Amino acid sequence: MVEISRPRRGGAGSLLFLAAAFFLAQPCWTGKAAAAEALVAVAANFTDVANALKQQFAATSGHRLTVTIGSTAKLYAQITNGAPYDILLAADAEHPMLLEKSTYGVPGSRFTYAVGRLTLWSANEALIATDGAATLRAGAFRHLAIANPKLAPYGAAAKQTLEALGLWNAVQGRIVQGEDIGQVFSMVSTGNAELGFVALSYVVNPRNPRKGSRWDVPTELYQPIRQDAVLLAHGKDNPAATGFLAYLKTAETRRFIAKFGYGAD
Image (cartoon, rainbow, N blue to C red; front, side, top):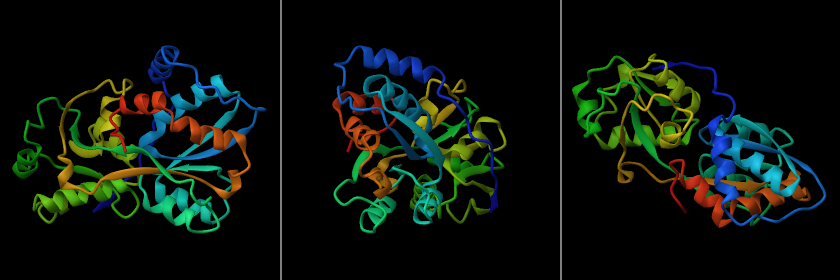
């Protein structure tokens, strides 16, 4: 396999407009306290949604959030090596559970904020047929991009899918890896890989100008991608951190998250 890194996408663009329009139509979340700031570590697949939510949270609470993006495994390593994050929004349930069981996380604070969906996507509108498994078996591509299964939950889900389809060994020579799902999306959107397994949230994002073709992978082909949040010990007394976690649990916020390709817990 070849491991390739690509620049991450920046900003939230039209998501901010959609966030503002959505929340203006909802009852205002009132959890205001003295202004504080929290540092939030966020899995790459949730980048744009997190950036949109932090703007609305700041407007309704007065608190500020600084978002740091990365693969869940790398963010976990940073936390256990002393990085002063207040919250982790992971792409899996395992790492938040490990933190909650250690001195780095606050017991009882962990919950699922989103359930990720995997899709096989190509920027080429004609490449992926209704049956994506048939497209993979036909092999009319040079490169298939996936996130590193050892680092990224979406990469592990991609490997599980290929194994379930009996194709993992057959496509080994064509697989290119990104460190996280954002890099995989970049590879496919630029054409460096003809197709790849990405988070559905990236494809349905309003900022994605190339809808291309896709096959939403049946959920029975991979283990559920439960994305958990956890309050970290560094943020246990930080009202911006505790307030944002409460905000994530509100019905209107969960409806907003669902609009971008995530399932409910």
